[in-house]
Image (cartoon, rainbow, N blue to C red; front, side):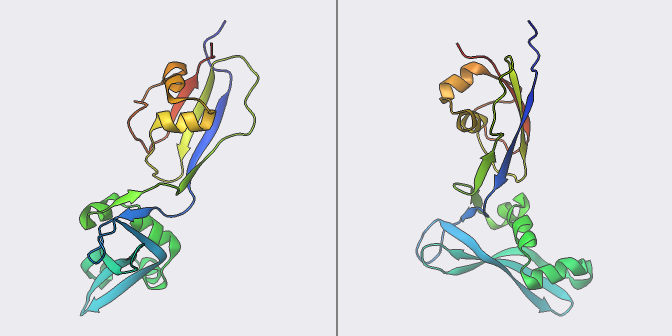
Length: 186
């Protein structure tokens, strides 16, 4: 009997909406903010530009500015990028919000609860075990592999730890693709 998997199943993790920001409001002390409609504020000071991403507190609706660019020369911007800032381009909002440097500079983290889904094939192969699954991330959603696998297979996390062979730590969050093998149950 061969121990090599016969089938590789694709799983895809993708966002369903932009994540909330874990960011303390100066007015009401709430710790959640949203990009809402996704708007930027661009301010010219001579030949220098400041660009901020506007976010709103989910409790009191106070607007806060997150620094995207500070005192940057106008000539350093790609014209399409500058147009995107003026138009509030949704893809530009998403790319800036998901940028870890922006999060570090503005001291916030992303709250992904309810903002992603796992797409799995509807049919499970009837072939011999083991079965290999390849997980691909369309967005940098940090998830613990043991929780993701338990959700995708409908197993308890203890059963996941018993039946799954994987080259990455199952209990440490990751947002990078990985492959795991499901061994036959008892």
